[in-house]
Length: 227
Image (cartoon, rainbow, N blue to C red; front, side):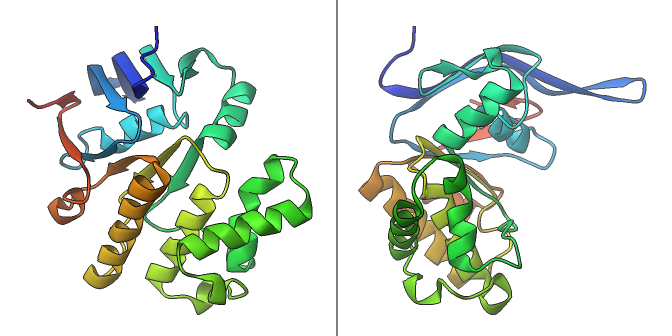
């Protein structure tokens, strides 16, 4: 049974990939919880399984065995169609390289996830303006990604991630492509999302400085959490 204090409950997760005749074990019998409202950093060397674990929690990838309960739903049991709908309702994504669509303005990029919600155009516009206001980019809403700095593009990506009011934000190396000052701005913004909006954040990073913004840091080594 789900514990209301936990937004994520991972139990006995295993994940491997086939490379030719070889089976590569990425995650080996991992179990842990993430408390509602937590800001968790997952660290570890390249190839330790950090991004794979993040993708499993976000419903982008599927585990070989075990269970992953996120916001009350065992997502491993969902069909691909059900999983797509669940992601749209529950997860906001922040990536290292922003993943903005270059031919759309900042506002249009933020609006994209709202097209799946059935909101009216007027309501969508209000949500977009509120999200861009949270990241202090209202004045740049009609600019295209090429007209924005890296830090501004990542702020647009964060606005897009929060515009649907998801239960959880997953961030994969969100400062990895930014200079130190821009990275600090983004980390400060994520801290605000956590403290002011109560968002649960799971962040994968290799940067100890970035991890300091989180409440809790866990280290992955060869597919297992080190103690």
